Length: 420
Length: 92
Image (cartoon, rainbow over the protein chains, first blue to last red):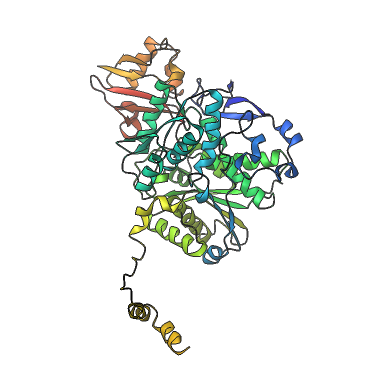
């Protein structure tokens, strides 16, 4: 049973039926899914959720689907890693990493939003699904479309990392590389969506799609024993996830699953593409677009659709935001890998580096619970880090060759080995 | 100066369903004024009461966001293409 009552414009309040619509025809404001929270509160409990399947549909009362879910049955429920070694490195007491780099099936947070969008595409009777993407979303849409047996077109900027391109192509969609950056792709897709009548997951299905992002936060709360973290750091690109984390946390309070202990939310961007952080630091909610120039290609969106709402959610929560350089991003990727054994893409490196910066500056206190949301996987973006890791040592297949190498690498240890 | 204007779905009720229309003007502002003459009511959907493009509307001239050009004063030449696109789209 669905608790959705309809769509409503966030700006002017105009109501719409549950259809593949994403903007208000009166003011162009975004449409939000409305739920009957009073009814949800009466039925949902921690105990009812506990025995459900380990996928994102365990919170289905707060998701906009009708009927039984048929896609995304293995998506979500990613690990919340107690990050003791990273915590020690950052000088904080209670740190967690919410690791969506191992999300099923395509290794990014996008499997959450796409599960919901594809479920809706099927409900609405579309036979073709599509998206504008910096890579991860295309990977996820192509994978889910293959599993659901839908036609698929994905649109990406040209010049993406190989892992992101092949990571879509393998599922057999029509992959279209558009000359330009993501913002060019996005504009084109708005026009293609208008003309071709496909299910564009992040255009005409956006109100449904974006609801899937809430499950990242729902899981964090459940994994903490139905508690909100005091602080959460997440990257902002188009700006979908951050306001949806805020919405999701409020919903958990509203339906009685957690106490309202407050969670400050922090936005992370790369300095080479930080339109939201610029606006936040300037004290305005008017986000001016920029031309992206960063290694963090998955978050290189210069004209973020939801930038305004990121700033609102950050401010309302009492959080903040920071941007970091490409060097800091690479250092963040390595720090996470070398303390927690988690290999993330530059977006994740941005989240780690921004958390570090916010802790150092005192914005995030050292003695409260902190979650860093890791939204993507480093195996897709090997090019980004290839130059900043050690090359393998090449030796002959002879013990003597290794002995020589070992002496060169660790002189003190080799003495112990020889005498011990 | 005659330019082509691409009309997004939410505004097509003003253009009798047309997804592309012609308009006359030397810059973006004058195009919007001309659209208003042909399709009364359309301008206030695109611009707020101070005359600026609304927060959730993006306007492009030949594919370039006018915020990277001269905004409403962006000069136009014969045959330019203007796109009016809802800002709310995209993910990553």
